[in-house]
Image 1 (cartoon, rainbow, N blue to C red):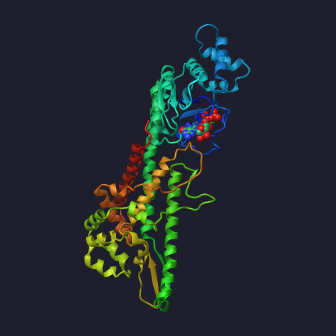
Image 2: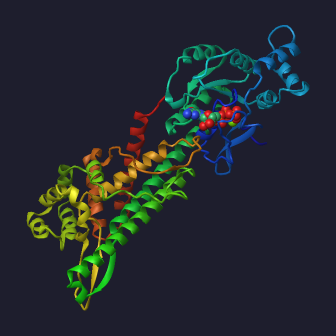
Length: 488
Ligand SMILES: Nc1nc2c(ncn2[C@@H]2O[C@H](COP(=O)(O)OP(=O)(O)OP(=O)(O)O)[C@@H](O)[C@H]2O)c(=O)[nH]1
Ligand SMILES: [Mg+2]
């Protein structure tokens, strides 16, 4: 015997954001799958949206056309019933017998078949008689009822108190949910609210909630893995080319080659970044949040901007501490990066040693875009190999990581119910790495230094430690978003 799947019909007046609530709750950003538009009456037929894990369907939401003639429908149902309070029998007769009221009948059918009620209202609208009629009709269904105040832009309104008062007496529970801004925590809370109104389906709903939680953890771990691989590849990456000895000895030719390689280096870095974000967007089921559109190319992290180096990455003191803690490894990054440097920094830094070198480089932040020469290596022979990258600053990996974390936040922030195309880009917000606990900075700092030398450390232990550090960092991003966000 197949188990009965709990169903919830999302109902309310036209244009209240019913479809948007479902789209955000179930992470559907495809307008072909769920139509959302400013035109009232967009949803015309009840449409089921299953919540599935693998092939297993756990719960089902039904999008419905909105109420369009609630007051008239209420009178009609009362007429069918006669004296007293109408119930399911009168509603069934109304749905089956009377001509007209197509929208009301379509939205009542799933309720008569046993679905629970999610009644979506927009509390910025004044509460009028037709809303009271809607509430009355829904009460007559006798189904478990949750009212959802779709708080636009997270703001309260002058009408909210009255809405809450009326909803409070006609519904089992009233919750807020902003369909354009709700993030994971708010989605989970709304799911948990269903538990409070639907006693009979408790086991199924509890299972659904724990599957959602598990899936979220898995996604975070997958994301951490993608970010780890991106950072390793980015730090290891070089642009290189052979140059003739005679060209090498001519400063203008050498400079030209170097400039070409710098461009190649940044192009390769951009490609790696783009792949990383495409994968993150896939994991978090975004199609309208994009790395680029037909009109716009992917916007990579802006390493040429002094601002980037100022707002992201670690402080000089933190860099120095890492260089000191990681000893030879910390010093090695600086050594590699300063070979053949201008400003005569190579010898100076070489002389200062690990901690001092990091301090010194930290102080050179605004100059870093010219430090690409730091990767220059010349091998002996008739032709020489010019190798460029990564940037000399020990802050580079941290800035890369902050660039990823800030955009990871953007991904988590975009509600799927907003069906507008948006290009993923980093805002001017603060980075996260500065606030990492020292132990995490140490684990990552050591690993970064090895990767930047061109040899990603092998071994399950290191990999796992780095993975967990990155996963914790993603958790930090989530916590910051939740605490700054619109928790109901
Ligand atoms: N700013 C903002 N706009 C919203 C929000 N929720 C929905 N909207 C907008 O309101 C309009 C209607 O949203 P829908 O989700 O299509 O509403 P609906 O209740 O399904 O409408 P019908 O199917 O026509 O009954 C769309 O333009 C949405 O983008 C919200 O939380 N904030
Ligand atoms: Mg709709």
